[in-house]
Image (cartoon, rainbow, N blue to C red; front, side, top):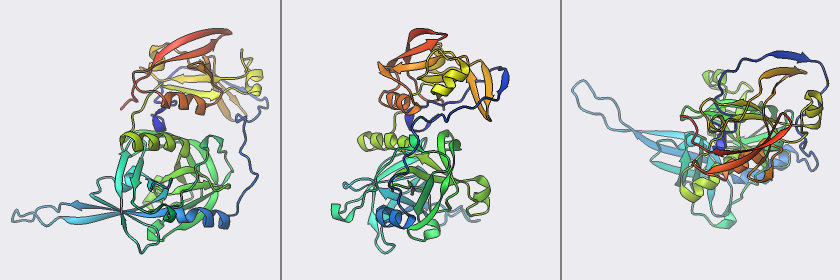
Length: 373
């Protein structure tokens, strides 16, 4: 299940393929590289964004086990600490679902000395996103601008701000180590397209912002690698939920208190001019369908996945499948555009896809479903 309801990349069925090594140069798959103009220093980013980062304390009562005489001990209070950040002047704060899961009381702190009671607006374990709201004057709130995670590339500089080990508003810096990683959500489902970073992320950073060089949030810090978790510390392998997926979840949580995900069930890669020329594709724009999840709405609509795998400069591509060129009448050239279209629909809605199949255009109707559990 992909994050934020799109589920563009899902659990994929196995397909027998032929692998071919191609030693031809291929331009970068991203047609819109990140703009590095106007880059800020870490100090400038911290001064601008740190006032919008909060520490979150979630309190819950845990029943102790019964004693030998059969009497229950008094409930014990358990506290969970995490981070969050302000997104608007209405007092909405974004954090991880895992930070407040099971909490009976949630408090927010800006300076370490203040404690403000927060209302849980909504939370979603599948996407690991939660929205809180506090009653504070707008002048006391510093919303952090949200960026575009579809433009994130490996090597981009990033800054993480959070409260590791209750050390208020700690900033760490690094780069984007990888994109489109898969990590586990608290509900046991997979979060696709996660951003990997070597900026130090420790216990207490969960729910804090991962910020690009322009000072915009491009990810929601969510977890560290299993190896780092075992050592109770950072190992240079942390993950963040891409902010584009977070935006969709947040919008639904504020509006309805829950996330209703629509699901298509395809894995695809954007077609570039170089990719089209190298593989002799019938079009130089669209989304090349590499995989179709078994039993998914895409499979029921008979979308065709790639049948052979080709390796180009260490990157694998599955070719021979449909190329999605438009969705609901609008051209589709990026995964973000397809995801936005799906996220605007509900399970049960019918969408129209135009695909190029071996040089012929076909219009395919697909009834969106719910992500597999």
